[in-house]
Image 1 (cartoon, rainbow, N blue to C red):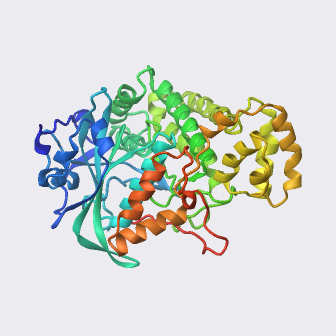
Image 2: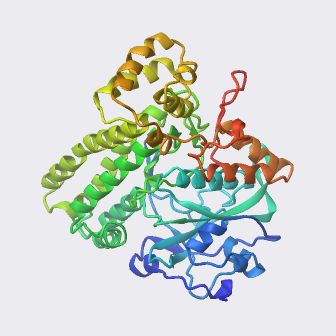
Length: 487
């Protein structure tokens, strides 16, 4: 049995990308205590859960003691946050421990969130409250079970100290999460600025060593089929179109789609002020920091395209020596995003309604927007209609009669109810249930509601007797729901 202090990490990011990180160490955790451990994920990573529960394992999960093979660093990146460019963001309260090569040959980052201030902290304390770290654990694992490419949560560890937030002192915690990598659009923005700033001419087509090394690294790690920066751009556009289409189909609202939260791998990252739709309303947003609804549910495809335009701008020095030619090449690729997204959207929704008749989708989208039924329940109850009982789905609508012509056309197309059940979840992380479980954990020290929620969400497509409350939305008298990022 290998001790936690002898885990073999690799450090290709550190080896290959000097200039895009700062070596740093985690802050002390005065009374570290393991709160949640994802044993199944630990096994997938080739780690021994029993070793992670030892004092040495807990020290690894907080970053206070790491194996000799690890090199902890704070990653550098820039980003557009709510449309405003910040040239120096970076891991202000997080550290990359290193990379694990799993038994099946995959490479995964181990990253710690809430591990203390770094030089990128911008005035923050670098710590994280327990509630938001539990939230990221719950939502990321739910997204994984729902089939959305996602960062995943390995553990939440309480630090034994309190952090001060607007609502008062809260227990501190560190989240250990994994990802295919933490390369972001913002990483390329930072590299492009570094390359331009470091050139003799100061122009975007000057010395581009950092940017070129980053592109080569991203290709090798995530898109090995790409043979050029242009093909890398195309691959990331495709991956992001598929990703956003997938999360739109389950009613996910990311909440903070800044360019530093868009990965090159095509995984969802950063579960701060995210939430899930109850009523299907494209204008819905929940984030307390999104004052104008920039990242509302219906805006997400357009925001993804906007972010990808920023990615293209960062890549321009690698696309062609002539800037006009580079802009033309990038613009040509970006134009393809809309078709890629719409194709992925339509494939997903045809699976959700169990037919292969695209003509049905236009009227369906209009009905959903007009009548605003519960997003998750609507598609799940549509299976009942496919089996002959339209009552449950009609009961969700404000004007069932307006729905009936579409229902008749859809039934005539021969929907496959069994196939629908395999893609339409019964259970998603209902916002009120997540808040209820987090409140019990943080205020009362009771983890049982979180553990029950995780158990339900691990198998979202199988309806189970006795779990009805996990499938229901909040009642009509519930207060408006708002999410907070926890920083």
